[in-house]
Length: 194
Image (cartoon, rainbow, N blue to C red; front, side, top):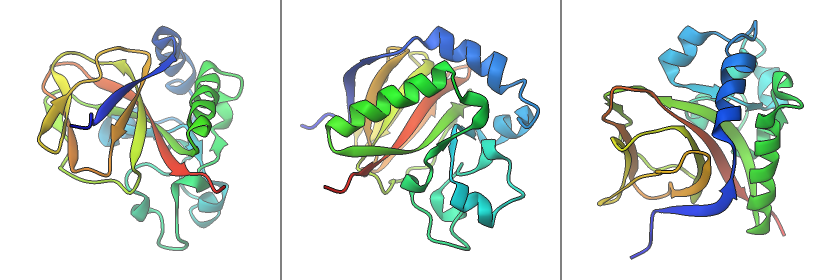
């Protein structure tokens, strides 16, 4: 049986990412914590082309949710999200995004959208499939009561700061059955053209 979640051989320092989340992202003048707590997502990369058609959108929110939410003016794909948020230039977040991008390239994949995704306590996503074959995840805050259901399998991303792949073309959901937030750094992938 194929594993739906696989641990990769890439490590990061989650304490630095969490520190930057609270010292760089949350205090940023354009960041709205209530919206993040509402949607559970922020965008760390954005698409200049999408922003041309949605100039009223905050960069932290450009590309959150499903991509179909954004393509009312132009067809939107994950690879369009190629620009890191200016507040993250020179940050450890930028270093980690580059680290994962380099890792993905070794396997013929690119990295498009990058989001910080919060799953609130006692919540889960709907069962769904994503267009990508897989996504990368780095758990920043997690616990044993947070898990994924992929097909008929239950699996966890146990190690904070470690890079995982999640088969997202399979029917799946994420569950946080705990009393604390579960925060993951999530990287959408796309196949690079040869």
